[in-house]
Image 1 (cartoon, helix red, strand yellow):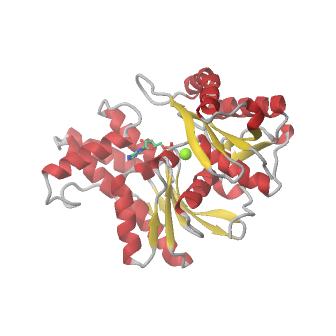
Image 2 (cartoon, rainbow, N blue to C red; image 1 turned 135 degrees about the horizontal axis):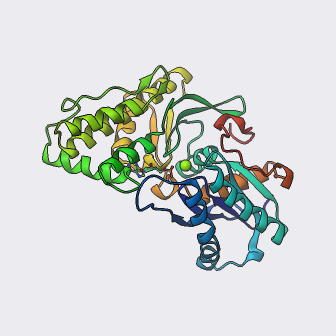
Length: 338
Ligand code: AMP
Ligand code: MG
């Protein structure tokens, strides 16, 4: 049982973030830095270098902001996977260093499960279907028999990566998702009667799974053929989000669960939140989304999951502390949820 603060280190991809939870598992605002490449996508080695350079400053500013010293830290958690290898290794190395220097337990946690747990805590959900929509991951998840099971997922790229790549082709820097949201909303404001009927795109649903690269290519083709950028952004969001909402709805129907919980960076999107609320309302379910600071990658959720796992007797030995780029949501035993 942690008696002091648990620090959490998130370093799976673009963001290095240090977070904290207190002895009750209550988080405070994390200290984060995100790599923003001048051109092109995120290069794993360059992101890892960025994280290395940012680490010391972020950790001390987090302690200062909360008037803590290293002596107040009683456990350290880090993202063990999934993610970009070089970035994960930086986070793991820092965590090992803090653990051995302060002589506190080390807990390597599953990044995807951390998104679920911070959402459950912040929204007060019991047994939700999780729609996890981030840069690299897009999954529909349900708890069953001691694991978070993946009921459906993207077969190619994550929805956030799709939005970012589409945006990049229009000269919009990372992260493109929020800019697409803004352009879509502006366009709708100028075209209030428009809904889905404007521009047609392929639908991303493949059974219970999803595939986004075809939608992205088709959206680019619309632009190449002279369509307005705002109109394409609106249509791209409508099609991509409707596909996610459709498999989430089917997951609710098949499992008989009645709560939907959003997680991941794309869950910041107001239109996606609205679509989920509409769907849930139509089937007497409820839709929940955590505050945006807990949707994007953050150290607080890693600290929270470390705190929970430690309370359930799990620690990571140095021998077991290697990162796993391909760690799956359903590989982590979940002994604490319902
Ligand atoms: P994550 O990987 O969970 O940190 O999420 C990062 C992803 O979320 C990036 O692909 C962003 O473009 C995307 N994102 C962040 N905010 C929004 C938004 N408001 N609408 C759509 N996508 C977003
Ligand atoms: Mg994430």
